[in-house]
Structures are given as structure tokens and as C-alpha cells.
Length: 92
Image (cartoon, rainbow, N blue to C red; front, side, top):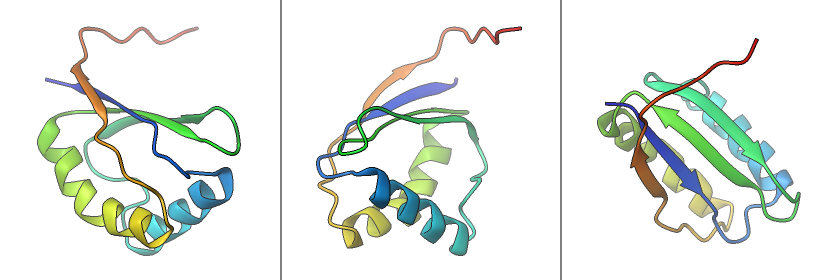
């Protein structure tokens, strides 16, 4: 079952978000298997992220690469809010 994950990590600025993307790409995890959608939004001084994953296992595998990168950038990592996805409607 697909899951939605919402992240609001302390100290995650737009510059740190962009750097994290570069490091993920360099690590071969820029477009990880199992991630269906990725959204980054909000204040540039406090970027929030919402992802939809095929399943929890795919997200956990990605976390093995993501968490050390965020830690090295000085981002305070909080437990994401996670919930099953019951439907996705794509706009026209």
C-alpha cells in the first residue's frame, strides 16, 4: 500500500534542500526506486517535504542514504508523519 510522508525538519533551508538534492544525485539516489511523488514547499528558511512512496520498505531503504546527508548538513531530523494513501487524483 502506498504511504504519504510529511517532513518538517528544523533547520532545513532552501539552500540545504538544494545541497541535499546534489548529494543524493551523486550517491545515485536522486530518483529512488519506489518514490512516486516528491514535493518541497514553504518558506525558504523552513522547507517542508511531502513524498508518496509505493511502500514503507522503499522509503526505509532510501533513508539509509538520506539521513546521513541531512545530518551532515546540520538538519535536525524529526520523525515524519506517515499515513496510508487512499487515493491520488491527477489534475488535467
